[in-house]
Amino acid sequence: MNKSEPITGECFCGNITYQIAGSLQDPRSCHCSRCRKAFSSQASAYALVNPNEFTWLSGEHLLTSYVGKDGFGLQFCKICGSTLCGIHKGIVHGITLGCVNGNPDIELGMHIYVGSKASWETIPDGIPQYEEGPPKQPQ
Image (cartoon, rainbow, N blue to C red; front, side, top):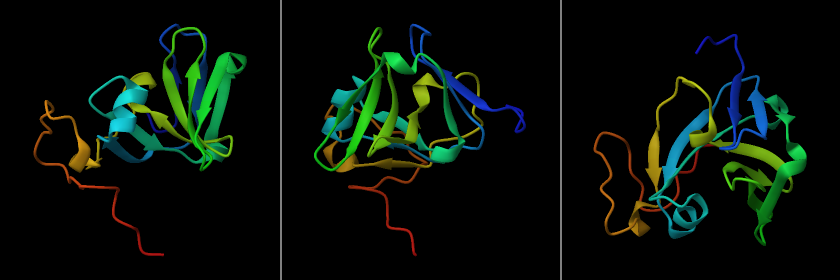
């Protein structure tokens, strides 16, 4: 993907679209039981975004949200059910990589919560794995 072009994405039915003017950050795959259920898969594939660089282009009225007690949640298409992004207190903080169009020119940098991965899943070698969440970054 040309770095001058924004990253775009959409849900399965194509009614909700977005763009990101910047880059994706900290791509990861989470293997916890909650992500398996939310993504209907063995794990999530997710990257962080700068909220100021994220824009809904169409279909924002078709979003529905699930938000937990801590203010973190996910947003889905009401029509097709695609999980599009993660939110915190109503602000998009990351996107699901499965809904990105084209090649976002990133690679998964870590597998997290592998201590609770599904018994039937095999994680490929060569990418850092963490029993729980990612290591804390120095402040």
